[in-house]
Length: 92
Length: 201
Image 1 (tube, one colour):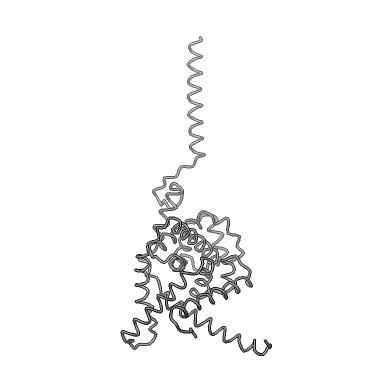
Image 2 (image 1 turned 90 degrees about the vertical axis):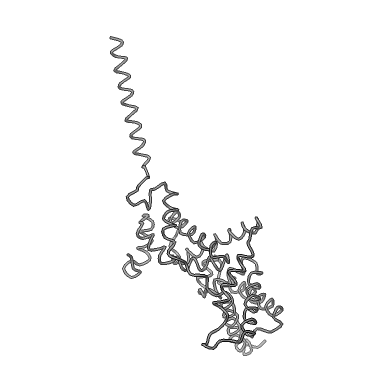
């Protein structure tokens, strides 16, 4: 095939591609429009998955594990100190 | 509210990486319609497309750190949409739960809005019937392509994305993409011509 013929064929192929694309677009049409934004549902998904860490607004349910650990450690220290005090008073 | 001018994409990505809720809201509001439309093209059902669209944005929120920033944010979003849609289609095929009647309903809906009428004139009932039949043939031909070829045709020929964008979404070199598209179109043309008995030119 000569280069001249190849040059002639290129625009034809392009035209055929465009026609096929148009046919596909017409056949596909448009999807039914979204009824309202999906944002509230997406926020709810994320809120559930992050146990309220994100998108909770004022209803924050997420608890930082560090705070929980600190609380537990403090409680243990208090109990230990109380027990020590009790043993100390019993031994005297 | 962010605007694309006030907050260029790089800034938006930076905020998303910090899990900024307002930035995420803006991302969803900007891209949800496009993601939904692409999901619909891939899945064929508006309900599935809605669910998948939500899944896409939840995944984006979870994995924004994985976005390297070497493509547009929209390209990354479309890649996630395509990958999740493929998984969904595989799952449905495996479980053989694809609801054909639902798809037919969707096609019926499309046929109303896509009967090829471009002028103000009303086509005759026979012409409308022929138009709908051709649309059904084209749709069936598209659905009969293998998943990869179908995806490329949807992205390039139906959604009208550039070759570069499609190559990034499909993670293919441009040359490979063009040759696969060429093959997909040839297959489509053959199937349509065989079904209509006409040469599409």
